[in-house]
Image (tube, rainbow, N blue to C red):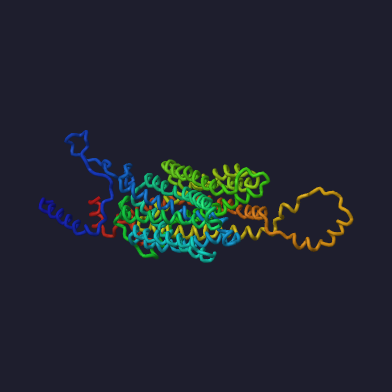
Length: 570
């Protein structure tokens, strides 16, 4: 063929390629062409890995050095998460004082937490939808302001119903933060560094919960001489002050990163609400991890709410108690903090190390942790009747294994869901896990305990006493007053009956823990495939569509001429 024709044909081919430039994907290869270093002038060309910031699998490499902006952002988010959980469990630490003020039953006490969580879970999808589309920084600021205001005003309420109403309002503010903050961390870091930062972030759950017990109880004890039975109200006013400080830090110092920045997913666009739902509810790993996490929140919510009160009852029913009733909230808070400091990083570290060889290791770590915690939690509830100190030790280890999953579950959600849908994913996980978990568990445990009380025999009715023989006159007196004694001897429910009823009802936590472990084990069967699909969508190698027709590969076009052109480009 004449050279002129070759030149003309090549020119036409290049012109066709230029015309198709707008319709073709970017080349996703992480390789480049260079001359072989050992061949000198040999024109042979070989392919070698490109030396850039990407890993061999095409995913972005992590930068081990943290910038000042990253450190500041993580520190602010951790501080807000800390006071978030402090406020949530301050009420649990002073529950006995609130019960005396409002004369509440067990079910009414549980309803305080249940009502809060119900509103919290309902508002979570709203903020999740907004968080994927609008400024996350200002959404968090508005929510934190509303939360601080509701907590502060609620501490002045004179009756149970108004206090319950403002606890519901607190849930609105907390929903804004919990759904958005983890997605900001995911946009700052990748891979193991993201897991480490999430572990730091989720320290706040056990540590904040423990501080909530401690601060609420200690402030109440400190001011009990001057404010009497109303001293507990001051315990609720500590976190709003810290919340207003957090609001200032968010507005002035926090810098919001672009969505998907750390993974190269800036090209992804937000989609409709129905498309987001379709994506999430066809993601098997998301569904199973949400069901498993629901079991975790059920158990954690029940233990956190009823734990101090149950332990106080245990101290009361012991003949020779080895712990003081007024110190229970403080010790319980210290246990929660210490168990979190060990359990959260232990779970994150175990997942990071094991998934190097086993990509499905994260849900296995969570499932094994739940199974180990089952006998420990049961033993702690049984021992609370006989020895409080030993019960403290056992429940500490139970909480360590229960805390293995907090950072790991959030990490799972962030690496199986694309960046533009992560706020929605966090929101819907909050919705379902709290709707079927800790939204109902405090109230359910209280209702079950109340229903069991009539079937439990008070311990003092079986006590045998040795008496001297009675005279005939004395016997006649007792016979004449038998009806009166029978009428007045019906006592109010005593502490032993309350303790045993609550103990039996809390055994439900062990059953739910086993169910959660099963869901985590099932999750391990699908997590590798779902993560690979998410990475491919972020890299642009797969269309973000659910229909089969949209998944057709660009490497098999119908036009043979186009196929040759694409091969040439590759």
